Length: 343
Image (cartoon, rainbow, N blue to C red):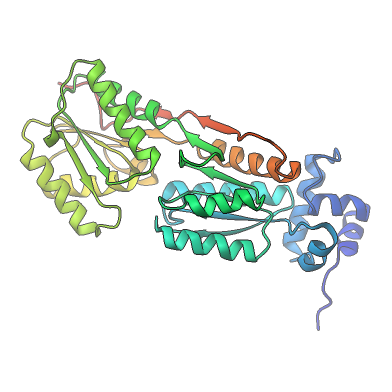
């Protein structure tokens, strides 16, 4: 039987003190002035030797499990999957493990995940909220459980949050199309009560209005989040065929942009010769597709680091602040081949 590796073994192999290794494992390295190179050495060896701290003993001793819960909308989504990856890496550097799962934008699932993670004694939570989650978040606040909302807010809840300036991203993307000569711009989004989708539509509408361009109902298509792929593709195809005169399409999220490329191909509309295309959120496919797709990209690493830093700050302070902290991150407009100046 293989002997379980201990913190003493880690310290001995690296020729460090047990105290130094302990500070790294328990997320106190930066606080104690331990160098980044030492932190990386310890974390690399922990992975290599498959060292597992005794969380039960640590919880009894310190009241901390050094684990956080991460609840996102969809781990298979480009944005959420990459945010989760960065949060895991950054949490590990700070001596924390991450329990992660996704809700598929279902409130019942979100509530169950929060309860399960609380029962697992996580030190705090990073949550992409669904609608209908207000009561559960109020319970976290009442029980002094640290948490941070990211990607979207629930305005009725006074919570710490990290969000994107969705209005600015959508405004800039629409303004880019208008500047390049496009005037009849269609908008494809999802039916949602969440703040980030409302802000994206508002950004689109404000940019059109500021340019003196009218919008009628036939210019906007809304589909359900849980509609099957084939139905959404068909709906987009019908939308562009029915709304004569469209010269550009704005997709409010990246998965709709992917569906939209398929839909335009099916109805034989060529990008950008027949119609320009832009999307909110980047995707690997958008870079690789010919022509490549113009996007308002979310700075994934910045959002993830802001979220983990804010949560750990709240955990460290013991939720003593009397007010919440909000971080708003600006998107990046990446101009590619799908939206050139209109001929």
